[in-house]
Amino acid sequence: MTRPFYGLTIVLAAILLLLLGWWNLFAWSVIPIQAQDVWLSLTHFDSQSISHRIVQDLRLPRLLTAMFVGACLATAGTIMQGLTRNPLAAPSVLGINAGAALGMALVSTLPILYGALSTSLAAMIGGGVAWLLVMLLGNSWRIGGNEHGRLVLAGVAISALCAALTKAVVIMEEDQAAGVLTWLTGSLADARWQTWQHYWPFALAGLFGALLLTPSLNLLQLGEEHARNLGANLLRSKLFGSFLVLLLVGTTISAVGSIGFIGLIVPHMARLLVGQDFRIFLPVAMLLGATLVTLADTLSRAISYPMETPAGAILALIGAPFFIYLVRKRTL
Amino acid sequence: MSLSAHKLSVGYHGQTIVKEMDLTLPDGKFIALLGPNGCGKSTLLKCFARILPAMSGEAHWQGKNLHHYPSKQLSKELALLPQTQPIPEGIKVKDLVAYGRSPYTGFWGKLSQQDHQIVEQMMQQTGTFELKEKLVSELSGGQRQRVWLAMVLAQDTPYLLLDEPTTYMDINHQVELMHQLQMLNQQGKTIITVLHDINQAARYCDHLVVMKSGELKYQGSPEEVLTSAMLQDVFSLQAQIHRDPVSNTPMCVVED
Image (cartoon, rainbow over all chains, first blue to last red; front, side, top):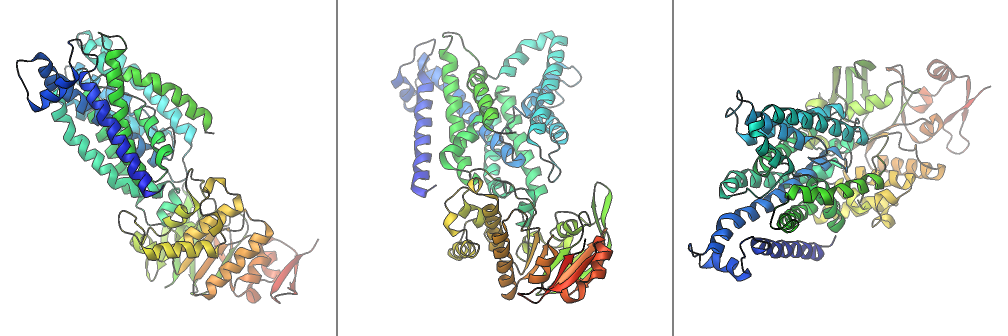
């Protein structure tokens, strides 16, 4: 990967993201918004104009959240693939999404827990417990004990368990069921400025922390024996990496619900573009993740216009075939 | 600088493999660790490289407990080439060898001019320079082993531990490697390697350490150690000791 080509990739990805973002602000609106209204609402805001208000109050926070969701999930997937040296690792594959959803379902439906924890904290704890169980069952903490297939199977099993428990909780507390079901598929439709305010500081901290972890992830791909031999502190990297994953995924899920496959697909796309060096491909993965979720959110208004399809469902449509492709390509 | 074990026990899953071993390895030598399968030679090496902890007793490096030594510092002084290497996907030879410089680079891992020079020099020395633009995953087993050796050499440590480095190599590459190690030793590196071929060890190394069932049995020059009595005792093998017609070092010939 030569330097000028890398710079060009970053600039092109950023331009693509901005163009898609701009399109997202006005496309497929039930109340028609002109493209120039977007610009005017930002420069000469007119509170009397409905289209200006839609852009400012609904579209803009939704777009910003979508971009951060994409970057966070792509980053979480990258960290997980690096820590486990498993190409199939991703928050949705290894049980974190399902665990976080269960955590949120528990605090928002059970009267005893209601209000005791914030939803993002509940999502982080739920995701953390699921991740821990998957790593233990998948034999992934021990040196040398890293069997790719076993880890993914553990992820599938724990995901299924968490999903079943979540459904049981939802059935028992029918009043809350509709809300829970919305964020189980993951949708950006309800993202407002309030969502954004609670989300971005944690997301930004997580993204920055992930950049600091990239040199260690590079050493880890040489195997644990070599990484240790080169002076890497494996325990510290694993704990810090796991914390970052939980922070990124927990806050994302509590903001927009469980969106899958970004964490699985995007790191592979970024690697294909710019190579294996984590320091180089993580920023590309962040941009691509943001682009893909922005695109999915725009399409979520288009597919069954004027109704909305959850963005999570659209990403699953792209992601599931890709997952099958990866499984077939690699010998697990 | 010296590496030693003091009543050191090492093992896995609660099973003791190396048993209360006392051993001081001499500086500046080319040392072979010998012994039957399962005698604990690899386990001992892994403990010296801090892949495994001590169950009891201590391993010492420069008179200090090795397992409490600062890891960054140790990675500039002691390097290990493990028995099996992972096959990382999508990494070029030159980038892999460059990772050997990570103990010396700053946090972000940026290489200096000097680092680049050392990386190139080590690729030349191991005959992998021509492969530098290739992916590690595309290489043959023997080539790959030499690339990993180049990476470990780029660590530029006075001590080098190798766990059966010749395993995946043809005989010509084995000989080449032993010559390289001999040369590195003459340049001042202390080399400690696990070997299976006793005659190879006696020919190229100048200090042999023989283990059996987790215990140190014999230690000394090939002349002192390679005897019929030792082979009978450690390997239960009837063998005669002759002179290698080329190097005049002792060599064993197995009797029926």
